[in-house]
Length: 470
Image (cartoon, rainbow, N blue to C red; front, side, top):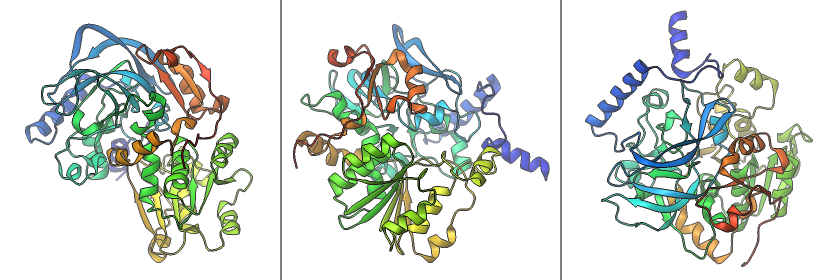
């Protein structure tokens, strides 16, 4: 029995040392390639990975080496590899809160991160090369990319659920863990395919026609960059919770996604009231600047009681924009440290306790594995509806881009810093440790607009959203 348990632990990465060498042996690479080749034979994979490289032209990339160890490296730039690819010159990219899962090597799987992996999944740029089967884009088009890679043809793509695509993620480990795969993603570990990410000067973008948004010249990069992930993921949180204008809402986690969700709940959905829970003073202050109420859980340690003081009947809906890495009580800290669980259920417990009977919960904070003390009794007896997924980014572009163009919404308030890609190690440390009131960093490349390049490393500071139109 003990040997079976140890094998199971090894399969999901339980008991592994986060700081140990993340390299993978030649035999393991061959075994992984064999599994991918078998998938290709059965037509289940639709992307060639890794991509082809230019014989002479180079680019700068952000490479992961070990926990809290990233660097800038010069590598050959990618070229079109499959006929539906494009190659982008990246003009703006950023560090996402979920990039910290990789930075801290916190993906609960076997060798999810490997030395030399290129990070980043929020990016935009100008098309440099176009594959022969790309129909909707041409060289020179300025575009935002979605963070995921979807084929456009499978069952889930046809249902407009692009992050559930079945043909772009070769990870057999995900199949073992979840029973199914979800879509591949840029720079997001080998659990989602091991694709090269967007914290670089160039990127190969498979399935351009399904994953790119052409943006008007009238809008600056910083106005549209977050349509790659954060702004759409925030909106996805409101969709998962099925928010209505009459709703009173509670939201946990005021990182960039939580701030975006709260902002869009107020400005686009028009909810009656929203209370945001976090413990970082400058994030709470920023949420208050656009009309949210806040609870600092360092000051109000019993969050459930504080919510019931303010909303005696409980909220109509809740959004989890924090996820699995942030336990507050000792029990969950111990369980995570000893790997008795991979994800903490503490926020889920609080949400299920406070939400009304027949209430709604939307989850856009990342969860990966298993948690203890999940309140299944509350979910069943109170008729709670829970929905979560990675964001269906493309579904929200037709909604959010016109609102940006009209000035009704402004996501630039999330950017508190600008810095060149070459300063990435400093950027990750600042963002991960919440230094200098950092909310979001806009990273520039040699292809960025001169106006942004000339800013060098600049603190923009906290600023409320601009409202140009009502």
